[in-house]
Length: 120
Image (cartoon, rainbow, N blue to C red; front, side, top):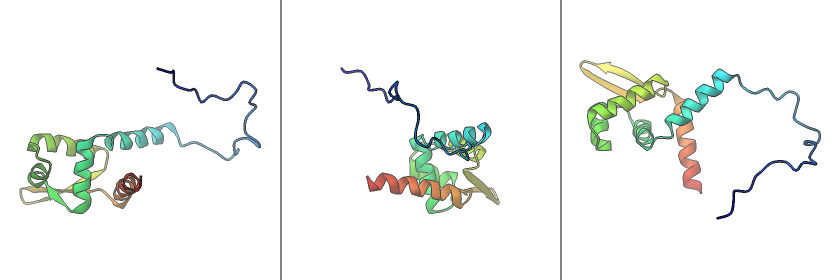
């Protein structure tokens, strides 16, 4: 097996011309950490399925358990994780708790990712 090719600059490289834009300012560490957490949440197939279902309609844990063929406890655990990241929100009506995506930004991230995969 061949070793992976390295993508380092040649030792004669002196950088891009005219170089990086001086106005290029990276987001602060807190922001990049939160962004990485968001992508980490989307890195789990069960959570992706939950988000997909909630992108279609508001659902309760019972309905999500049936759709995903999982126990309510496992679904609740995943929903709590997504809620802590503000990916989903809940609404209580009587004794029933309904879940939905937190906002249009979350839905757009998910739908754009889904479209990108389908485009391949």
